[in-house]
Image (cartoon, rainbow, N blue to C red; front, side, top):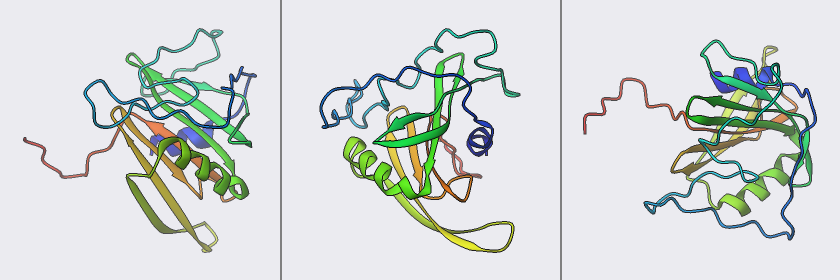
Length: 179
């Protein structure tokens, strides 16, 4: 999975400026112009936003031709986030991801639920590491008009939880969409 690969490869490289809104209440998600699902927003970043100007080595090109910008660690919901990255193609921002300590997962999940509301899908799965130990992973998905955001209580590393947004929503394999 591209997102898991990007999460595993993402490492902080340079500091970024984080702008915080005053007050503790999260703004309501902005509804799409057509009504229905809201547009995704994270710290004033939206799907399709152009890639910010950076030095020539700030956003290397991936094998698929996308540009992946590695971000510095930052605070989100009062907890430390790490391994942050944003992905851009010719249409603009297509993915945003970061990890938090597994012990901070409940704090981040609570903040995501306040900001984005009730998830459109939840799932609990048993996952196994290379040593055969099994763990429970809870996943929460929020649906947006321009993609999906997913929080996993157990991320690509055993001691992390992760959050990612992507505009590339996979269709079920073998599904025929002819309507």
